Image (cartoon, rainbow, N blue to C red; front, side, top):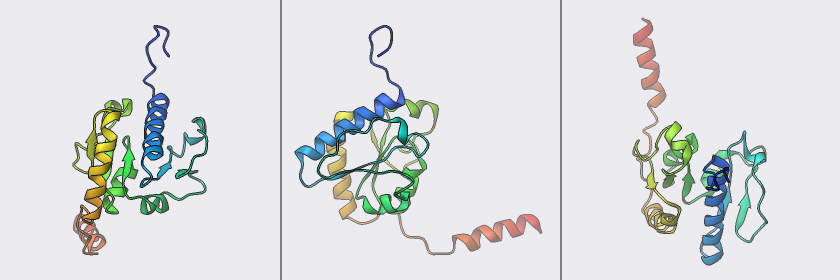
Length: 160
């Protein structure tokens, strides 16, 4: 807490409150599981909460991010390229738009790649909505495989 007795809204406190909320949801709903993964440069600074059934703590040096994304049905992020990668992989993304980091960075919902969550109590409903969305198939159309050729053509036109 801060000196004035108010809750500290730092990234660590916020992220831990979200983790606790998601763990509670997994305890209540046996159809859900959770992968907890913090940023690779900060994961070791978070307290590791007790092991629980259907909760996996992902260590970045052990679990490659793409494996974690592909093992997920829904991805919840603050603001991260992981949200973009998840959307491209066809996973519904929920972005925590009320995170302190959003004010200093970017909004995935503002870019149209996530469903916005404005308070932790919204997570269960948004997760259910995203689970229904994921069963409908990928949100973004698959690539035609020609993106690299188009980028190369633009570079070639610029250079020559």
